[in-house]
Image 1 (cartoon, helix red, strand yellow):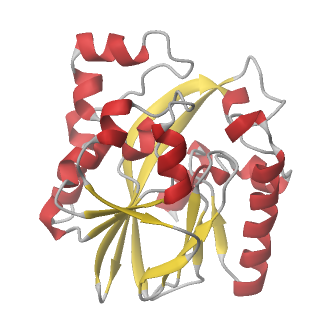
Image 2 (cartoon, rainbow, N blue to C red):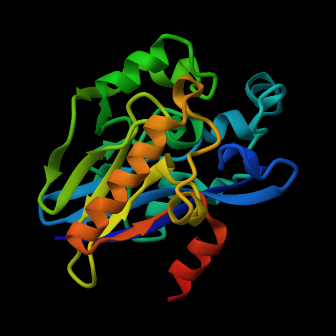
Image 3 (cartoon, helix red, strand yellow):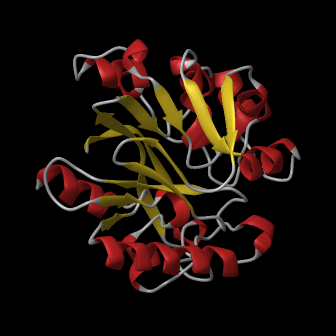
Length: 250
């Protein structure tokens, strides 16, 4: 059984078409960049770690990494770094035992330097694709850093009540996370398999798909919905500001 806490690591404004395949062009949305603290009897796990603060705080580094980038830079404060967010909960980075990355894009893997002591779980296919240089949303220094990488293949349970669910399509080796909770229904954190509730309700692929092919992403959305039906889990999208606001207010 697990306790789950959302960590708002940044806000990001971009064209909606980057979240919804074939629709939304010209509409600018504001999206939360979330990490998730999962606490179990066996230890603490972070699902994603947000952006690299140094790349956003330093004007030279920000221009180098984001000036010509399709997304543009997220808005992040020092208070939204992982150490500060953990401190607000009475924790330090050393209290994190394990990081599971949904994928290796800059807004999900950039903060690894703040928890460099922890094991980092990522799918083998994800790291291989990122290292190939074919995914421009992966920053080379982040994916090549000598962290404690553990490359996995397929689904598994890193801790009691926590199941990693392969959900490729947005990237080559994307994973979602199914959690049994102490209170309430299970939760299936979709990661970027579903940025928005719209991706789930309308079965619309993310706007960026590995190999420019939306079909694997659609298959993953449908598979996540089947798992939710079978387990009674709630499906939580990853970059939906309205959903996030409802979540923290309920």
